[in-house]
Each structure stands twice: as structure tokens, then as C-alpha cells.
Length: 378
Ligand SMILES: *Cc1c(COP(=O)(O)O)cnc(C)c1O
Image (tube, rainbow, N blue to C red; front, top):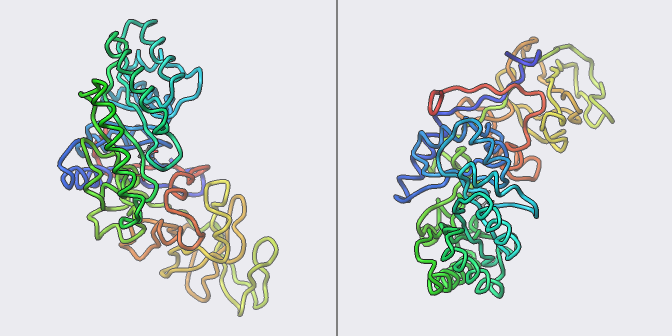
């Protein structure tokens, strides 16, 4: 079923499975597929099932709600949720067998309280800030957090299953912060082990580190974007054996001849150089097509690459296809794997000065999502 215009996001489940398998084979150790943010815009549950079909050992999400949605859909694989605010429902997390991360004494106290209330042992990951200055306990706070977690483990309230951190510059594989973060991480691990937390898996590598930095792989890797086939280093995904899983397409809603000098779309930031054919594309910024794509972003339409003519509106944008034949219903591809000559999400990212992560996670709105391939399908 379409939304009435034919605009759809097509997700290739077999690509997600194959990308997972390629990464898993490269690192030859457990892999946590990150499916936060609705599977990076590919659909939380189908993306999770496809990644598991491709050999993912676990799933990772940001917030508890995402983990509980996986469980509600019947996904039973281990899942870690790492971002919580005070009052998060750790009781629900424990009841659903969701692993949680903590980075501060208050978080640990809440998890311990939930464990006592439910009589279950919480599977816990401890996060240390090794230089990103984002999630993670500071190195100064770490020994106390570790000691408290070791006490909670001795009491049977928690089992510390993971020790982890996150990289700031993994997409610049020679950056000096990488060695510095690895050193801090290893010191933090040593502190935790000395406190008796010897059974925990160490994990540090996001996609870029999974692709480029073997010294960060430790006991498990934690890729997200690469699972969806986008090159975390901003290069050619195919060169890393990855295939983009998302194709974004729409259908021309109107085609018409206009004379030279016609101003196109709001503000007339584009005007026709000669008599030409304009094609109307019924998707806009409310659907996640960046407004910044006006006069900049590429699409494949009427047999060639075109740049969007004039501003992207809330619901639509316009193409100038010259004298090429175009008719209502003809396909317009915004981005895809690239093998039909269509732009890639990386091409769009370059055009609108962002990263492909932002494009795929924000596309949505009134696009219909359609799955192809069979990996993980139920
Ligand atoms: C999003 C995220 C990942 C995955 O990052 P990618 O760059 O998409 O591979 C891994 N770990 C944490 C903590 C994250 O927030």
C-alpha cells in the first residue's frame, strides 16, 4: 500500500543481513548490532531480525523504550539499552531481560532497587568516558562506581556483563585521540578487574572502529551505520563489502511545459533558462527531505541525474528535466545503493553538508516503508 503518491522507502533486509555477516566475519568475535532510532530509519524490528539472521549476537539501542519494543515484538536476543534518565523503568527492563548501562552512582542505585524489587539480577554494563566527554563516568568517578558495582554484584543484585566506552574520532583512523582513548579504556578495565569485575565483556568499537581499528575490537564490536551498508568513513561502501540497504523513491505527480524565465518554488531561487519541462515530486521536508537540498541535492529522474530546482517545500519539490520525456508516475530516486546511477545517501550528505546518518534516520513522514528480501522475515 502506498501513501497515495507512490513515495516509499524501500529497505533491503538481505543487505542488512549480508552487511552484518561481512562485519562479523571480519572481526571474528561477537557483534552487537545497533538498531536505535528505529533501526537508523530502516525499521526497528525488521532491522533487528535481519541483523540477527546475518549473525549478530546481540542488539543495542539507546533508550529503554526501544528495547521493550523489541521484546514486545517477540525478539528474544540479548539487548542492551544505554541511555536513561532518572526514574527510568528498570523494573520493566529487568522483567523483559534487557541489559542496561549505568554511568553514575544514582543510576546504579536505581538498577539495584529494581533488582531487589523484582528479585532478578540485573545484567549491567558500566560506561566510562575515555575522551568523548559524552556518556560515561569520568576517570575520576570510575573507581567509586566500579566499587559500588562490585558490591552490588557480590550481593547478587547485578551481574556486570560489560565494560564499555565510545570513540570520538574513529572515522579519522590516524587521529591521536584514538590511542589516547584506548589507553584510558585499558586503565579503566584494569581498575574494574582489580575490583573483581572479571567476567565483563569489553566493548568500544562503533562502525568506523569496526572497519578501521582492530585495536578497539576487544570482546565485542558495536556497529550501527555499517550494518545498514553505509560507509562510516564517508567513502565507498562497496569497497568495504557493504551494501546500502535503503532506497528512497517517489513518483512524479505532475509534469508541465513552462517558458524561459519561470520562477520555480517559493522565493523563485531557481528560474528556467529556456522553455523546459518541470516535474513535481511529492515529498518534502515534512517527510525528512532536507530543505537544504534546494538547488543542491541530486536525484535520478527521467533517465539522468538532476539537481532539485528551487526550494524544497514541506510536501514537494520540483525538477527541471529540460526536453527529456517525463510523465506522472515516473520514478524519482533520491538515494539508494547507487548501482542504477542513482545518488547515494553519501552524495546527499555531501550536497547538504551533513552525514548520511542524519539523512537515513530522519527520512520518514509520509513515505511508505516497504521491505524486500527475506532475511529475518517472520
Ligand atoms: C550509535 C552508537 C553506536 C553505533 O555507532 P555507528 O557509528 O552507527 O556504528 C555504538 N555505540 C554507541 C554508544 C552509540 O551511541
